[in-house]
Length: 313
Image (cartoon, rainbow, N blue to C red):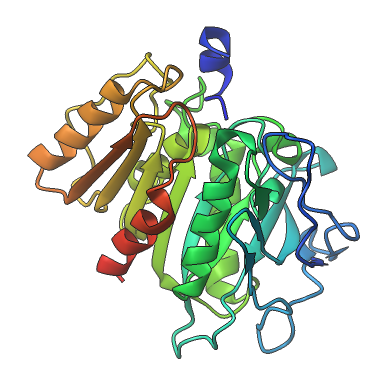
């Protein structure tokens, strides 16, 4: 779950049934990909086979949760955000088992960490690295609370990282492929392509590179998100210890929960605190939750993320 290019140099459309938990002790369990991600349309976008005319997902995400494992079903679709197949980006998503409210499900966008594709977040077992089991429990908790989850992949099938803190895109965000992906996702949510979702109730969370990407939602998409949960990261353009939090934060920055391990050597918690304090100085609601862990999804996040989003629901 490293941060991206700079920090690496410093430190380090089909329905998916609940996949069987792996026992290989890896960073997380690979969710089995069934099919090719959906049928490509003439417009160059993949429409998931599980989305019917009524905009209802074929998969109501009833996660199987035990004391040592989590397995959640999910759907996959794919969008082209450039001119070739090399720019295709998969998006994984799940709906709560409960019927959608009249306005649609509130939506949590989840942004993966570097090299840890978002097709791996839906299933985990005890002992998996980077807090993968706690992350899967967090997703299951959000689904139980009635949130839909939309989890796009970073470049190259999720095997890389987000553009948010990588030059030149850190300073010229509108030129990035990730920005084009976000615009396409917003359109898909508004048009019902990902099911019965409420585009007025958007939330975001992510870890490491995905945590910086979560901050990017406040910086570049003003007014779209109700609340954020930044995990093991800081401001959108920071990269680990290379971090400058600007004085002019967005005036409408969403309320933000920060989750961090005090022993994190990849994204030092002091950089997170600088961001949190700057928001507090601006009068933005902030909550900071830390544990004595390293660079991983921490256990309190399982309920803290949902509790925070519920306040602003």
